[in-house]
Image (cartoon, rainbow, N blue to C red):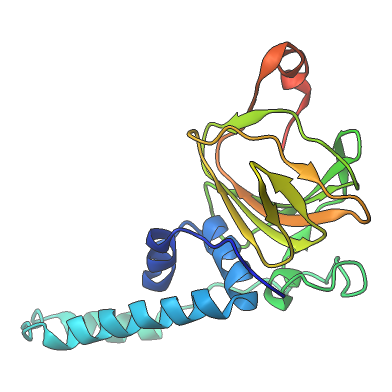
Length: 216
């Protein structure tokens, strides 16, 4: 697997620091599991952060800190719901990470000719929607931009846009500055894990006509 496209370094650093929205965290983790380069960068950020913390001067704890900790350790814990059964098999999407398979999935839903989505129900609150996107061979998306962030991890198949090719393991970053029209390569479906905030903003007369019917 030759990975050429990666998340922005600022987003990888936020992932290492644990400050990403949960939906975005899922997308970065999915890419990192197949990308040695991004895993190496993340470890470097973690090491720098650890070194900086070691250099911080010690701070006195409040007088009630230990009692507060004991109270939290002994308080009753909420009942943890059982893990939802796997609804995406390894046979269906072999490259989907195991940690994502533990989540609950909705069914495939038609959004456009040869384009279907399958929502992923996250276990924690998130401002980011996460879903699988399956596009048939040769599908040409409508020209569009985004009203928020869109993080795309290619699991299988490939698409092209702006002279670049995005294949298995590649990561595509989109926001309101990006105006593109991906084209799925022939031969097989292109399946991606997508984490999206906001909505697609379709361009052109036809795009404006169908906009009310396109929901991801």
